[in-house]
Image (cartoon, rainbow, N blue to C red; front, side):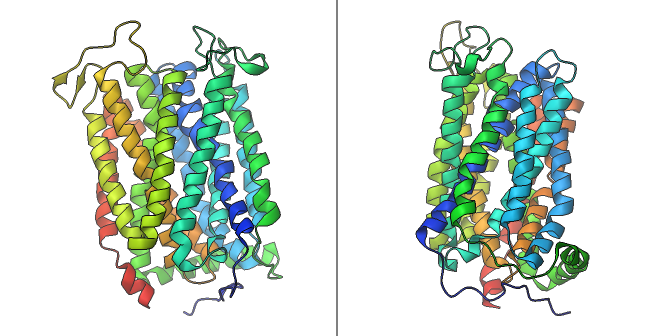
Length: 467
């Protein structure tokens, strides 16, 4: 069956001015604090250490919440992406799902330690925010091919990720310096009393990461709405687009066997992205549970990871345009496999499985023990390659997707990144529960990276683009 041409199937002859591209990059800057502050380095460890009964239960509950949100995204993203293609503009969808990001993030403030509703409020807010952030990202990604020529997509995607990392870095630094304090000393990383009268004992600085994320998104997403051109309206009503969306999705899924490179890439992306989501979701929780890290240690860890991630995304974007996205992603997966094996070899009293290590003495300072320093080094490696993996996956999708159907296929891209995203965190949660071990939970991620890398290695990108 012939595919239905989308309204913007013919690529524009000219591309928008630089200010429009710069404004588009600010979406990543605006959205990244949700992933940096909430998902990874501030709120998630706070949830595991201060709201859940113990870090192991906290890791399990966070995994189930991440999995449920991922399942919702997986089931709906291709359909909604196809509807957006048929109606034209992407910005209304970004605004709608951005509102969910703001709502979910704002709810996190009310997860007060000691409250009987703290755990459900935290998990519900996190799930709503995750769904909003991920869907808004789908429609932002679908705008890429209207902004730069195909040979510049690697640069655009890599610069976007780097811009996002910078936004996450600054928001994290502000949180650590001015908001989140050690509950014992009452001082922030900068040695200050938290601003706005935030109570360190009640962990208000950690909880304020939610409202800060919401406000940050509202302010910094505005340039994209004001300056970046959107796809034109098609005249098709939302009701009519939705009515034909299911049939279009079925047709697209039937079409995938005739696009073997694209189908195999989506399958590979489904698996290795699942591993990366779970790795980031539990990285801070792992440090809190195994080494007893508090907000300051975790925050410094996050800052260092974000710095390496920024440089990694910039370098990866340029490598992408030079050698292609596939080699960049494969190299990143190999580094992630090495990092996972290294993390599994660590415990508070040994490194590399068998080498004993003395615990830190009182007053030794931050990251004083050898296992902590090795974990920090492995975390820096993860940060360095995570940006290139995500950025090059995005640019590879933009290149492989049929012309004029980027909303639909970025929906499938999100589907492939989310359809089993509940599996990675859920498998980590189940393994953690069954073996009562955080190390056992992370061991399953090796399988995800290994299988995803093998599948991607078989993708023939050149043959696909030559068709």
